[in-house]
Length: 264
Image (cartoon, rainbow, N blue to C red; front, side):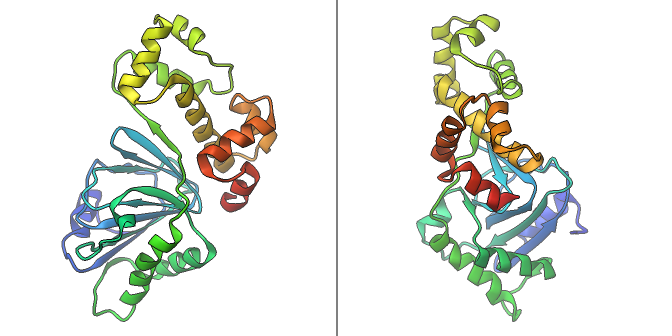
């Protein structure tokens, strides 16, 4: 565990431009919004983590990592003390590959998993003249080759006073049969007004948002409970396991059964 306070650690990451900063944590703390000069790889080895970026909440499940480009404001939230987070911060001055310029969530294969586990031996600044520096450079160089499948587990958020309670209700009631009609009626909107509000505030349709929140909830249940896939399908508003599986595949490029094998 890093002995630095949150603020000191955030400063220390970019203090030495040529170093790679290494951080391993098992924590429930929430970081303030910030950005780095360095590129950031955050690997969720166990549990689940959330990254807030540009009015969206990204869900990073176990055995996945998020790449955050240099200069992108964000903050990390870990709600479960069982989550194991490994983060590497890389100098980016000479990197031109398009992979490093965009944020993404990616599964970790066995090779990358073992390399990231090995980094547990190190903490803090890794200098270029350290003989082990090449290990971290190798990890960084592998990312564009391995980062092909991007996991679409993101929820747009809003501070709109009338929309916030709607979003909170949807998150808490994903098992119910949700329609634009009944939600509009419950919160005092016309269907047309609520539909337009979703498009203007979240740039997404009401129906698509409901699908996304159900898939995010499904990922959380897979990681935080021992429910069967049938039970998870029912808990997220699906009465057909095939319909649940097809929707899950649209968002993750994996069937639920495949996904659970990688995260449990």
